Length: 190
Ligand code: AP5
Ligand code: MG
Image (cartoon, rainbow, N blue to C red; front, side):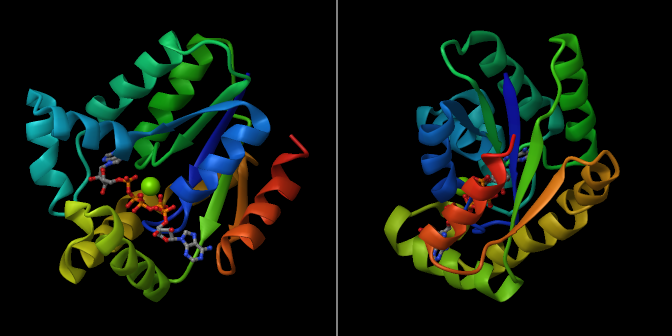
């Protein structure tokens, strides 16, 4: 099985590029953000707790998302691998993922990191706000807080994965098709 992490700041294009990756490589796309939004929509206890944090641009507790990932690993069949979008987002989550994979006698295939500058994050997310109506896209202060959360809590993972040779960075500036082709050129090698 292949295990890919699709890494990158908010609005980098993780969800967009995941669509073509799952098709080309027969992967299951797991977006913790999407799973959390489903819980919110369904009005579950977990959703209620997550809502307040997400709408401030903060992360939900590590254990919550780790449980979601493990349950997908245990139940999804018939794919050649998994594409993790928005997970792991902290060093603790990265360590938890290593343990989950070790328990399954598997290892991470690669981190595919889509990089764009902060100003482009704001432009893309502000544009998406009108289309998707996500509460965490609704104003610039929340978007800025998501960017700060990314720099403070998620960016340290780059060093974590660079050290074990799994980190691969893709320039996320360009058309959707240009970025897709850069990703395919990289992932075709694994
Ligand atoms: P999540 O849903 O993961 O949001 P995010 O990381 O902020 O990323 P986005 O979904 O906003 O962006 P994306 O990279 O998918 O970009 P997209 O393809 O949509 O997480 C939401 C929240 O949930 C978090 O803030 C946190 O609270 C919580 N959470 C989730 N996971 C967690 C975890 N592991 N631990 C703790 N908390 C967690 O593209 C953006 C826009 O740009 C779209 O409109 C798209 O059409 C456009 N676009 C894409 N590519 C291009 C291009 N090349 N050119 C022009 N436009 C483009
Ligand atoms: Mg997304």
